[in-house]
Length: 172
Image 1 (cartoon, rainbow, N blue to C red):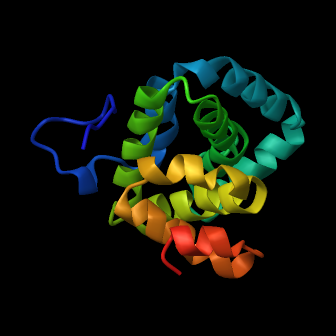
Image 2: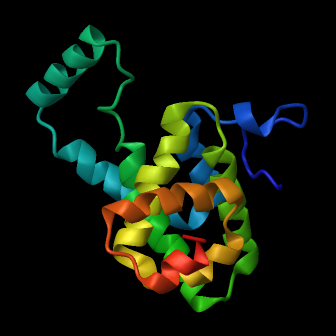
């Protein structure tokens, strides 16, 4: 499996290559095409908070020992609003299978990550919106999906009305 991550080191296993905080920087390195949209989304997000909101959020983060989420948009939003549409678009055009393969390999590495928040991100913020809004494109993406990514997507079937064709493709 090809790993495209600035944080990946040759002696590092796939299972410990990503921490949750590294995911968005890794994604932006892997898919620089979404950097402008990310910056615009981040600017809009940041400007939506008043100074009081930021202070209250920082106080909550300190109280509950959360990571600082007031500086940038949440990783789940980046996946749902930038990554999924991008992947669907390149799969639909069929023009950049190498890029699609790299992205899907990276998602597979996240899927098998032993940190629950990392693998759950793929299930909830990639597979779920993919199945819920783009089921018609799954046949284009399926050949590029790794085993664990397929499993995580299949787990989402109970949450949606999924066609028999899709169930059959995933072995349900």
